[in-house]
Image (cartoon, one colour):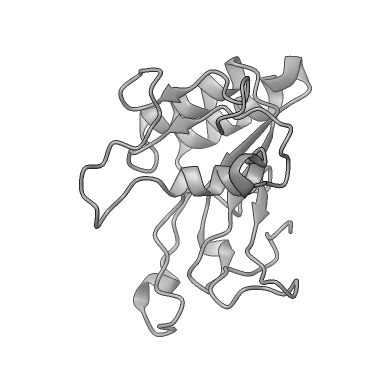
Length: 181
């Protein structure tokens, strides 16, 4: 992300500041997952890391808040109001461990909170000058049905699952009819 001009409109949705860098001082629970996901999406190729869209700009938004929080809604509003073409979301409800099929967390249904749905709808209808901003959600890493996840299975977003180096679903990836790719 060090290429000049790569970063635009950085934001921390919890502190309402322009510093989205990870701030968790505890090494056993780092909050840098979004950084890794952003690298897959748009690392520019500097120092050997290259993402799917290396020429794109990155609007880093740090969101360390509860699902359905006002910070979550504010993150969508910020991205939309500051010109995001695509909003890539690497968070969602907790999955059960992919390797433990009998874990009860696999069967929990997590609905999409109304405040978050309205914020997503705002991005989908108002982004890019009224054309709409594409919203993508990670399907999840629990080897469970994505239909239990109200975020990734919301019919207006694109759910993205994980694949391996052979182009098939990774063993840990969520699955189901809501998966877009």
